[in-house]
Length: 267
Picture (cartoon, rainbow, N blue to C red):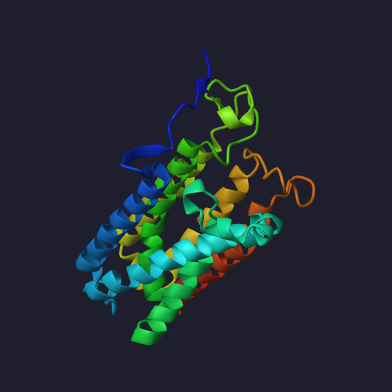
């Protein structure tokens, strides 16, 4: 069986001189679908879970979150993954269409947006965080699909039949680690959180946020073993990547939130 050779144009379509990239469409799709799902959660669970947050709050906070994702993810990539390059080429920081976004940076941006908005509107921070975390896997799914289309963040070389030959990564097939992440951190995590939401898990403040942070971080640390480390960074120490290191505090925070939510339920 021949390996698949990636041959997808990162430009979805053009309008005159303006190119519309799959990367941008993926982010837009994730945000729009996430917004609709968050509104649906509020509609169906507001009374039974005694939520303070309203549909209007969701509409408003999504604007904050969009900026948090974009600025946080881009600055996170610049600081954590390619600081020396961008400090010498600062104008390229704005070249979002070329890729280069950090989940951990985006997560920090979203956390800041959630805390700021919730404090300003006097809404419980964990309640807001739980609703937002329930929908984040949608964006992660589309974002990783966009990474695959862009032929970036590819995996290590493999002999498996499902290996993909990425034109920018040589002639040998590699793990499509972007699709692994789309499936594990996107689809499967979405289903797990959907089950928690369906079973009124929003009553346990912090449970969904904690589950998201823990499962994402644990999954990311596993997939990093199949993913080619950034060539300009490599391994921080043998077999340990920057992605693994950045995932550790999020994993710890997730465990703390899970234990606290369950403790409060049974106390």
